[in-house]
Length: 152
Image (cartoon, rainbow, N blue to C red; front, side):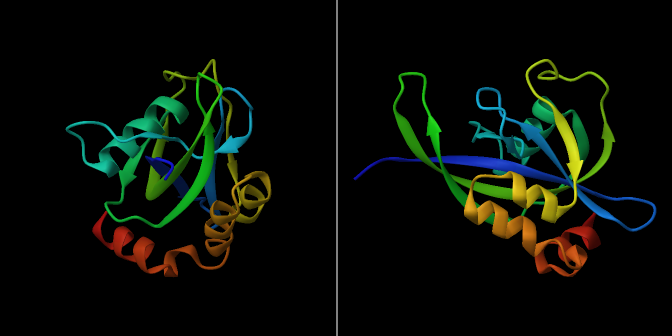
């Protein structure tokens, strides 16, 4: 049975002053596809704390991260040796307060705000697209986000 890699991701989000809801996406380093800031779990760190670190390193995003998974998706990660590994990614919601002008991976990635529908069209993973589309209508009514917003 093939091994499955476990990864974590932050879904950085904001509400603009006019009430428009947006999600922050970054490009992957190799294929330049639009993705969420994500990475491997980190020893000694809670999964949501690791997702928060990925959001800072990959997108320069600082804010509040939720401790409950908002969704999960899978994708095939190409490894350095040319093989691929099926990865399961747990997604944590994050409300962005600040975007840093300079951040660790700024020369390797682009970042951009999208509407959830627009972001869904740009991702390759069907389950991730479905998760993003589910946020297009009343994102603050999603149970995990509603609880998270109350707490933050």
